[in-house]
Length: 605
Image 1 (cartoon, helix red, strand yellow):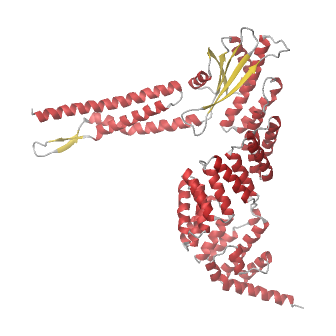
Image 2 (spheres, rainbow, N blue to C red; image 1 turned 60 degrees about the vertical axis):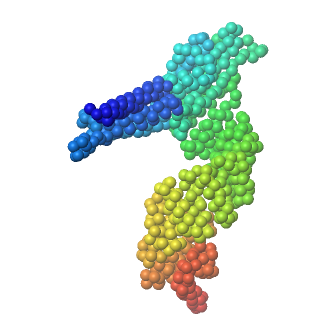
């Protein structure tokens, strides 16, 4: 054997050793990280790194085994490539190469589903209170009497260990996959006090690795003037903790979007307040129940709860929540008053300034809205929302260039903000920069493929460029998303008119029924109905039905008045100049006929 052959064999052996070690290390990293995951019930950053690293090593190693080739017959002048490993080894490697990614991604998907689904059982753990086991037993008895019999989704267990710190408490909650932990300590030396803690684990939708916690504390001390023995103090602590557990269950049901049950829990908690003399006012419960009522569509009850919370404790959260409820209900002046109170209590709240600005905009106080958006941006210039909303305010003032600047700033802060692309495209439309508008609408639709307004707006842009076929497709897509849309039906009708398909245009105009639309004012309905009647009249005239056309023009004149003309349609109805120039002779002819008919009618005897 030559020295070169020896070196090749040595290289081949070392190469295989490295390869098998790679696969072995990948497998060990996966097994070790999986065991750690199941032990801790949470994914730390270290566990995630080892899982990803192990996955990559195993995937690459199995792929190399299956696809690697060796050259045989080079010395004989007929070199051929053959698999470097036996068929049995390659089959196993292929199985790992194909099956493992499927299992890996299935596992990741299941993990995401598992951490976001509501818990089947709300596990409540009760720890020993500084070694005094009777406290934990008393709490368990109280829960059995008041909660467990009533709610079948609650499970309570006594934890056979003491808890000294909050960090230790949260570790135990994760370890046991619990939702609630009740723990604390008592002064057994003089039997004068109990301090109890309530730890609630709350899963958040977009927070995969760690869960947040809510902590409440009760300190029970007898009054200086009243002598209270340890038994009475312990019983009082148990009743208070029982109340907190009901409240916690309500919070968990709220987090799970089970708002009906959350309302029941919060109501139950409030009914227990008469025995809770050592606790603060229950404004937090009213705030949460108010939020649950809101999500359940019961706005009046939600506002009432927030008002009660404000009566107990006028705080920022209560005013802000009630302001949101008033805003959602269309009571903009009341919402402004609440946001103003919220700002006085918390002057650095970007959210309160932004929401108050939205209300000012709704009552057409655009300058005040812009001032509030300015404040919101100065407090937090990283949020895209105030920039988007200020852009809308500039749009209302016909300052389209400034609006575009703000929409662009919103996009810089969130490149996937579909609304910002749509609104910026709308401003480009106003500036007649139709190609830029279409580009923005394309981006909005790519981010949100069921974005009704973006399809409608892109159709308008295509129509403005006389790209009627493209406009027709966009309007048809918009109508599939909202078949009752006035603008979808009207714009499609006019586009079909432009394409010469008058019969189809008439069908879409006939589908419009503004009587059932509550979003337009009387004046807007008058203008939109007139536009519809004029369009139908001209379409009928084009299809050789002049008598029917004259009836529709007569209806339009009765609705709008004798001042109806192409000039009015261009200025008030936003008709394009080219459309006016094309349709003016027909419209003038119909209007003249109606005028002549009216004069003849007036002179009859």
